[in-house]
Length: 243
Length: 243
Image (cartoon, rainbow over all chains, first blue to last red; front, top):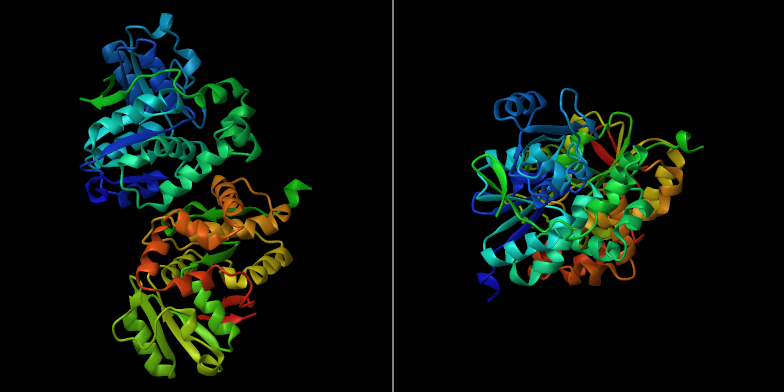
């Protein structure tokens, strides 16, 4: 029985993605603070699609061409030349419904393009707001999985690890997990799950520190809340759409 | 006060070492199973020095030139052409006392050379058998520290992370730690410290699995035992010597 289960691996940084075979795998892009939380939220609130692009100039150019909403950040702030930032609260239904969001971020959208370049079988995005949807999809597919953490400029971060751990905790019985990074992620998640926000604070997580310094505690709390934007963003033909 | 503390970072894989400035730092090479445990043990048992080399051919060549004992492994087994393996139990005092050990291993000695190439300020080696000696040294120096995990072919492993966590737990009040990897390491160590061996087993750690499959439970237990070979191996002029 064990041998028939597909493998699951966790890459804790984009700099480690090359260690895993993504070509026949579902790659889950994880950028908890805040790209993939914002993607789930915008789609949950009725965005037609989200187009992830890997540079600010491409974001501006494409936004003009398709009359989309350009958004993104560099180093946690709205990037120059873009209209909107990377906060899920910027995308309520009355604003984003029926529109196309063109998004570029420091880590998350770059990682997505990296997975694409490496020939990923399928790409979806994951965050606490759509945790349940991600888990249900992985359980339904019976395919190899790579949980790919966006990290911060290749440095491992706690919140992406915690999300990977949350997924693993829910799906592990259906996968063969021979991966220390996955074990580390699940163990840390079990330590943290009673109160993810307090855990981030207690551990002085670098991203907690950075965003809290910008007055974004509300964003952090939202991005650590499971299942408040229960959609599955799937990458297809250059766009993230709701499956 | 806080600002005057030197920084401490943890690189959980050689593939992440480039993210940290090692040029003014003490780099602690960590390869718990088994290179750095064996280095501490050989030196504790009176070896004159340990010369880490990064290839089997260089190991054989140098062994001949200086009449040293050649040792090392590739993929956990004694490498072809070498006399001895990577088990600390191969180096009791009556055998290794006064001799020079020329050692090459899959991950540990490679990482040491990587740190050297990147201009590391100082290089020492750490393992549970010499945990206390490492911590005392770091506390005495008041210098930046990079805890560098050897991992397994760049994949993060639990045991190197646990050792990093054990060091951090002992020294953290004297360092500025803005590093999620370090927080992750200490948290995991605190989960594991009551029984490191059982933790490795319960988490099905990949290296536990690999070495246990070779009948090396005794090695694993020894390599997780603190302070049974309390020396500080310092890299100087191409050799690891006892400081």
